[in-house]
Length: 124
Image (cartoon, rainbow, N blue to C red):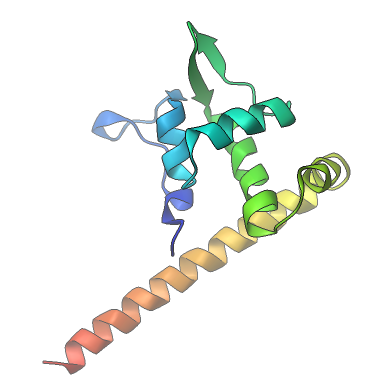
């Protein structure tokens, strides 16, 4: 799966959960440029990172919102206006669809791992 980062747990150094993430860390989770996140902040009020001297700190809630917006814009191919409407009118349904999509992508990844292992076994 190309965007396997989407399914990674949010952990800090030493394995503990972090409270906040830098723009670079969040961009990497979604395979985006930091400029895309800054742009999305101007278009979606749901993304509201804390800012300290220009440095952005994204909470887990911000990341959940970014995950939904990423799903709508990058996976579903919606426009910003379409994503706004979808989040306004059908947020619960969108959350469910995004969760299903991520589960299916994880299953696809797991199946590919099994296929690769079987191929390696047959080559012996």
